[in-house]
Image (cartoon, rainbow, N blue to C red; front, side, top):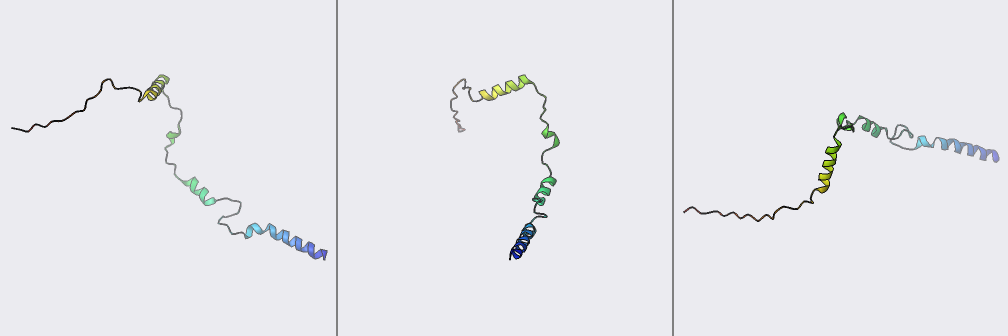
Length: 94
C-alpha cells in the first residue's frame, strides 16, 4: 500500500510540473509576456521629431525673468479710464 501511495504521489507531482503547458493562454510561451503588444509598441512611429527632446535651449535669464513677472502680473492692471458705451446713430437722408 505505501508503494502505491508513493507512486501516486510521484505521478501527481510530475503532472503538476506540466500543468503550465496545459493551460490555455494566448501567448507564445507562458513566461514571455504579451509579445504582440510589445512588438506594436516598439514599431510605433514616434510622432515627435528628434529635436523636440532637446532640453538645452539657449536663452537669456533676464528675458525669462521679465516674462515670468509679466505672466504673474497679468490681470492685475486696472483700466486707466472708464470706457463709455458707444451708440451708433444712423441719420436718414433728407
